[in-house]
Image (cartoon, rainbow, N blue to C red; front, side, top):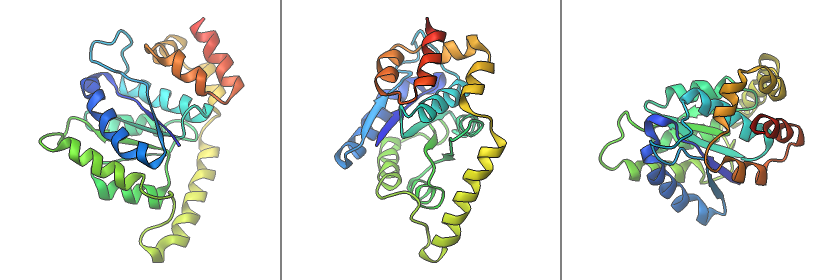
Length: 212
């Protein structure tokens, strides 16, 4: 699985700490981490939590990433922004039990952490323990065991509801403010990372035109 890491501007200084914790846990599991930044608070391309949602949607809908780890000061804004886009199911994750239950009950493809609120002594340990529980087994297994069938049924219902309540990604890309879109995909390493992994020719071509 290809796991993308995205940090918005208020918490960009913690990018290297988060990346190190994530890689330590998931690389031995056979997963790959792709760091889209922001890498430092002084990066030329600045991402807000709203842009984090858009970038997450671009990565998920294009197939450039299978899963996105992101967040903001409280995690709430990034979670809300991510969930405003099609085919993105993002959970607000604080601790290991959140990680495990979101994976097993909701089987989402993105998580938003609070990287400021409650992020104190031992924060890197909480991250590692949470990543362990988030990625420890195949998602959607259900929890507790007696709830497996209704939980899997509800996840399928939610997926179908989102198909009705969201327009497709190409419609969003063409109608969203184009300056906002260009700023979102102007990160220092975006071209290098995204175009190597993008699996959707239509999204790729449109992003290329925006950056041209």
